[in-house]
Image (cartoon, rainbow, N blue to C red; front, side):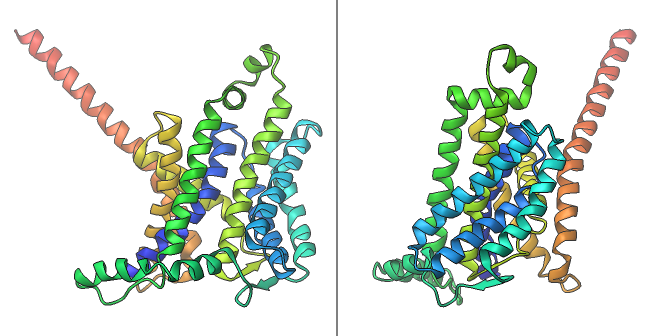
Length: 326
């Protein structure tokens, strides 16, 4: 069980980067961007084909993020300059990216098992530190018999994900970030202050999809392959992470909201992993589990709030009755 949860946390912290991108588009910009399903694969495809052509993995990962930025900007241009509905512009770009990703990859699936990736290079450097033996020794002293293959990927991705989270927090508190938040909140108001909302939307969607593509590049290197269908339903996973995190941790500040998104992504992966341990559930039920999690995260807080409001009204009514009697 520990190994399964460890793997869920490891993949969850990678998907958290994608969830942060979804947070920027859906929550900050209030833009229903379905480009995510395509740009996630674009990141994986660009990273994979670059690595297979001899590009250093770190540079290949940067190229993937830039490709995602370009895809997001094109969605923004389609919406702002082409006057296409926000939802439709994302759908159109998602469909277009399917063919683009096939062109980039050359075939539906690219294996990376025999290629040098960021994580393989990290594991090679990490092995000499002896930290795996140290951490596994602690687990052994607690009575555990099975240990993770390496702790390096988890620790690296925690550092990278939280660095991105802190940079996102800082960016959203700058003048440009405040203008971006204002654009999502009230376009007419920010236009009255002479801000160019079109440019802000384009830049915001570019930044959002660059994070999504970056996550896709890491997932491809982590899983050892890039597949043209690996982005299907990715927007739902991102939304599930955002909604679950907000329901559990709240959104009183930007720092807390982005932390909630990261936590939501990890919790989502853990819940799905535990759910798949149930005998009658199969891997094909993952989308159903995701839908049920999102429904629960949306409905449960409202039910709790309604219950609290009902109790408050009953207490107020009881207090009034006591006053009338006295």
